[in-house]
Length: 279
Image 1: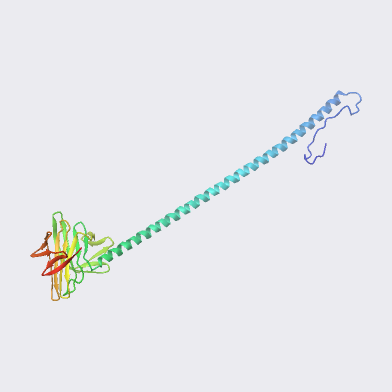
Image 2: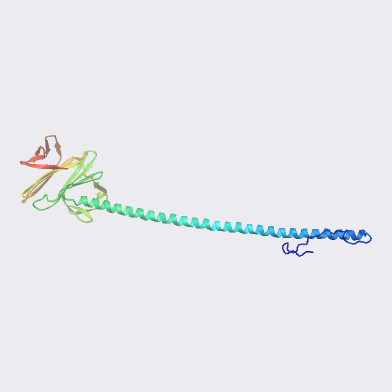
């Protein structure tokens, strides 16, 4: 048996050269025994090689299985991590979107309410509000030289025209409009009245005005179809008179109750005073 460190003590059979061995009389039994020993050595060597090969193969297979298992575990955790990150991202995006939408909605409402209030409180002009059945016109400030009141014209309309009308005084508070002392609330959409919301409608109207320190003449015309109506306010330092009724208009004049206002290039004429037109 040869001692070979590289082959880990594997027995390598060596053929016997009978020519070199002094043999006396040829013995068949001895020859057979020798052949058996050689055959046994070869088989033992093969057995050792097969065992080692199996061990190596098993080691390789186990190594491959371990690597495959490790790879699957890593991929699994990476997948779970990716799903978690995507979920967190989606949730944060949704929350940010919801927050942004809430901020946008709140900002829009504040902006709309601010715009509404700016229009409502602008006493330098007539303001008009309208719903399906009502038309409200708030007159300009400082038309009443006697009692310093502000006047409104309220019309109730139907399919056949005006059903009812009302003249009165108004004031504006922080949370409502008072018509003859009765408060009606408002928001960015309009003024609540009789179950309806009167929205701003700055159209289909015009007015004519003359004013100095002693007299004020003001004719308000509402031109809404089936809502044609007029209000005439005459005021001095001694008294104020408010009149309203239907009117007719041509290219030359406007007729209202017993009055006829002739037109000129700037507006209409009343008692030799020109009331300039505004719309």
